[in-house]
Length: 307
Length: 307
Image (cartoon, rainbow over all chains, first blue to last red; front, side):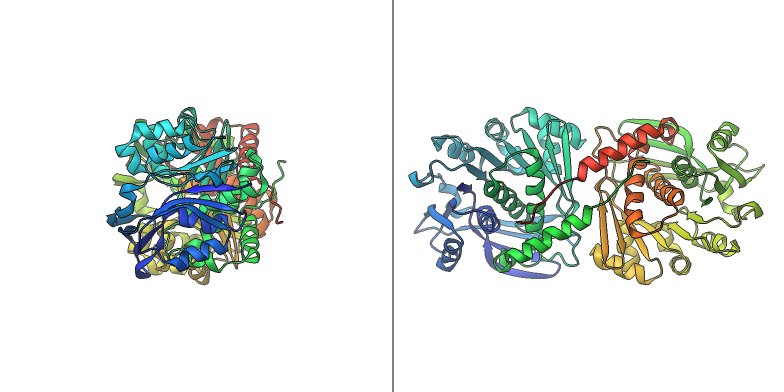
């Protein structure tokens, strides 16, 4: 029940209304791995880093069952760097700097030892590279989950649509769902997007929760109302990691179990935002996760009699 | 188990991306009454209209068990008129015209026949008038629910805080909760607002659902994802009407039953937005409402095993 995760491993500089960090570990695959490692082992990481990516971070991931054979280390270049500043509402942000660095040369190679993985998480990345990973797998995984973003819709929509034909679950936010479908109504958007390939669509709405669409079914999971949202960076990737981690652990890809996976993903994301970067994800225990999931059950649980 | 509802009865002109109406029935008390009448009778309306308010609308309300003894008819003035235009996302709108007309003279008088009501719904209105209604009641109702808006926070905050000391449930949207409390986090905002008086706080987030706070408890109800949101006007008032209608019907004001009341309110609001003005609310049957509530149960229902 191994899980391949593909995406960036990076440095971020982040400014929120509550503080600032100049250099902290980031990257989609990093967050996915830290979240998923709570549920499934091994996690087989595919990424690229520069000479500056800290060995301690690699060791920390290895300790948690993350295999790094598929992580290319480029000796003469720096790791991908992103810098952003959040607005006061924490729902929107400005990108200040994007230094691609090693990402310019990224051409993911799937190690032989990764072949046969049952689950594949394609983190947000150039669509051509996501497709290349799928094509390298000799046996199609049981479930392929794909994350993407508006940036690729702007500059590589055709490639993105090609990947969509090959995946089972797409993860986007509400604005991206509207952009991809040309529909304002999320219900209509979901129908159009599922016709493009994925049988399941998850629309992430940040602090407003997430929707799961499949055929004519829809499920909604709220985000946990928190006293402090310290740094939203990586919350979407952490959500994805918890989601696919739960599915890989249970090996059950039914709609019913995906509902549970969304609650697990939401719980993981609610930890992520409590501290800068992936710091909080490194601290939490299984008991913390169980408590948080129980809080979600309380949040939405009601009894109703139709009299 | 009578219910007094106080608020406006008006004409609206509405423009949405999907259409336009120059003159349609509106007003907070109108929507509350149409929604609540599905659950409880009599509804004792307190409002003011001009010579131009249609008799057929009055008859329609009467037919549904709405008593109009507390609705003043001013012979030489027009009814309150509001005109607004919704943005493409339907989440925000510009007010184009506000003609107070009869509202300038509104001084609500509670008829003797209304005394003894167990439930009071104070629709969005000048805080001084809301307080005047409370003070006219010889016996305090079992539950007082208050709606308000940012406009009164801007120009009559002291009066508004005085009303808050006297109510049990406050209904506001997320921006208003932040303005009233000075807190960005809705969890912190809720704590501060409940210290101002109301034991229960409902934060409406439009298409993103609603939160109910009470002591250390929080409950979340989503909005139903709809294919078509035709006109959001009155959705908040309709939500309030369904909410207090269910409570007045069941006479149970526990936190548990308020959760159910929020689902009922959300179901009613989901009908309201399907057509212009209160049109859709006049069409629906008990079976329609039961079906819609069942759809909410499906939307959020999940089973989780903490293993």
